[in-house]
Length: 308
Image (cartoon, rainbow, N blue to C red; front, top):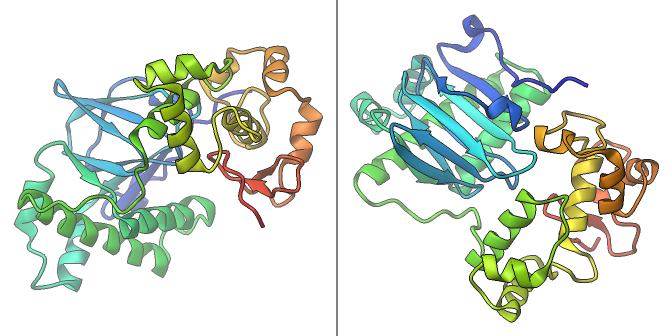
């Protein structure tokens, strides 16, 4: 089955406002990039992303995003087995709309300064919400020129302006998108990067530069479970990825390049279940939540069990 390529729309349709691109697997991240308009990069879900541009490297996760100047060559790398990255190319019409709507608070020269180099931002809850709503409007609803799409494009440009103003004045606020405990986050990143390999708590603790007890406390505090507890985090993530169709077993969506290298037999051993059982566990409405077969409730994308 061929890998799904990034979603792109005709340049004539969106180039003057906001153009949207989605990378859904590791293969689509390969190779250098150069965009004709200023770019905003937002990792989605639990994706951890590294942006290489001009000898510098920026690390991004769900609590951050980056902007890049038009015409700047860059590369993307991700340790996540099924990365998802949203790229927004900000056209001149979106900037003009924000300037017109929020005059006299928005001044065009600051946009020019903001997009003059690679910059990393803390992701506020509102900017994260606007970006996800815009993704839903354009990619899921396929509404490329609706009133909602135009409003969200203006909001993206407006939020970039005020976040950029704070950054340039060194008043950047901390992200209100929860970053979590650093030990638990590091453990989660390692689990994500090695989703279909066996987990050893002692080895995981060493790589997190923490004792086993510190790791277990941090993970329990962050996710309400332990890495190898009653509802093992890695197993939950494997099932979630497989049921979403982005893991070894296929299904809806695309297969990541890292997953296609593993044979189905090894995946079944890792998941301790069969293909038919995995498919039966996915929700009938095709949503991202799957059930672990217990009375605890659905598992979220992070594998955390939420009670009804």
